[in-house]
Image (cartoon, rainbow, N blue to C red; front, side, top):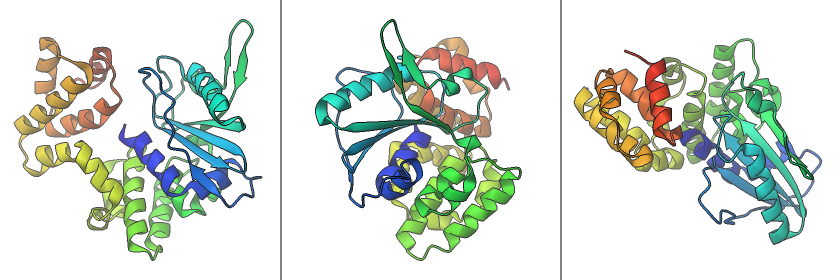
Length: 286
């Protein structure tokens, strides 16, 4: 969940940027981040953000995958009812899909049942005009996923904008977030060429990711150059997420290169069942 957790960090770090982007008619300068717990039972969901402004709540949900169980549409209805009961104010909901896909699910914007219909807004980042995103520091990382005929030129523009930020901590945080989110679209080598890793290491969000083990696995597998250690780390993480690994899948993992293990280490953050691993291995046969 590195990508959606990074988006959540951005929304909570730069709430005004998200409100101005998604609620352009809101003129309230007072924005409150709601640290509310709405999950009353285990429901797998990507990162949620609740921003309260001008007697209304902006509910954001960042998604890297179009499918989930329960469905995204049902979850939006569920969250709406809980928010309405708790806060009794207007609620504006937005689902933001990060990674480009042809799935029809990213065009679903309402839940319908026999006597119930609930709508919400859907934003597909690859269709968004980058102009507004480039004008706000807090939205620069998301600009990497926006509409463009020249993705490399867009990434260079973002790197140039971040380079002009004077405040060192903010610059480091945005560098880290941009590098994480850009990974959904760009090759790692291009990202590393444009963004200085030594500055990024000072970032708060980078340290949080490191603590979660996301970058620690890369450090163990790549810096030491030992495929065995990388595989050991990945299998431990997989076991934590999906349980015991079938022997035939373990054999396929053992055949992966260090680079492929690194890719699996990032992909497994979105795994919720053994079938996810099986599908990934099928698509990435050595």
